[in-house]
Length: 439
Image (cartoon, one colour):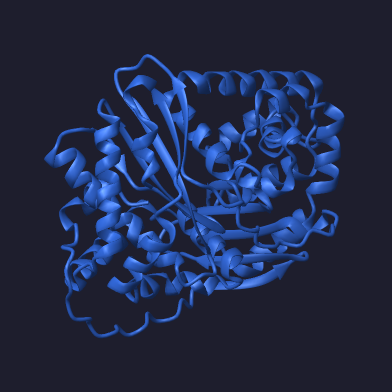
């Protein structure tokens, strides 16, 4: 999501204007290929301008793969694997990583869990070998499990002390309860407390399979080299029977307000409304509509009225999108009224086409500035492959945004910017349920 401060100056005027002509399509990306290595689909974007290599292994399914009682098990397992594997005991693993000067990251997301290598061309093979062994042969010693358990429990318990984390957790539960998206990525106190070594071993044996894996690599490495590397490591995993499917839409919600009393200098509000699936023609229009709304809210609530330091309209970029409203303020009722008024403007008026073109260009620039690393490019390609079944959809991203019309913005505002599930953390005497009832 682009920084709302970037779009604040480009808030579109809400009036009619003629449409512009279509732009010519972007040239195809000849540096990116897709192939199968060891039974695993691999997408490689060859970048020879530097020696950096980012490789992400996506374990597909994300929150769909677990129950409420097992929430957080996959990132937990991968974090325990950092403590040692069959071929790299704890001390030697740490020494080896320190000598290489590389990193292995674990990034749980709602639709997958990614474990990624950040290396150079010269250190890529050695780092990949360690990462692969963490997936294929984690030691899972009891002492290590208990250490990671305490770290996870501490983080979960501290969530209540962080108002941003708390309001996010409440909003997720309110908006996505009853669906996988309502589960916690890193687990709950109950799920983490009850995980056993036997359950972790069973999960590693049954879920680390080739049918769940997508590999995306961006960097200075050849396809033949990647094919050999993947085939000799992850290609030896069991095939498994997993099939990637797009998750269904979450259960419908109505406008609600979940509150949590806290004595704080300001109050935190976060609300979500359900959006379309990634295959819907409404997906990119809603992405732009939330960006436009962010700019309007920033200009009205922060710049003009000084009612907040932080305000925006987030867009949750996932298989089934969601949009939202976020603000910290000492005047929650007034801010909620302004948010509703700005949504109504988008629903009842057409944005000016020239202003929309400016917003699109500003958004594109900001989006790619925020996603310019090799690792970000890997995620971009993975989303295109998984959401649309074709990594080449990533090349069509800019044109899809440029095709959005003022009528599209108005349509998605009317269709999706309603039935908002709000969460509120702060002085509960300062907010009224009538302030959210109009959404």
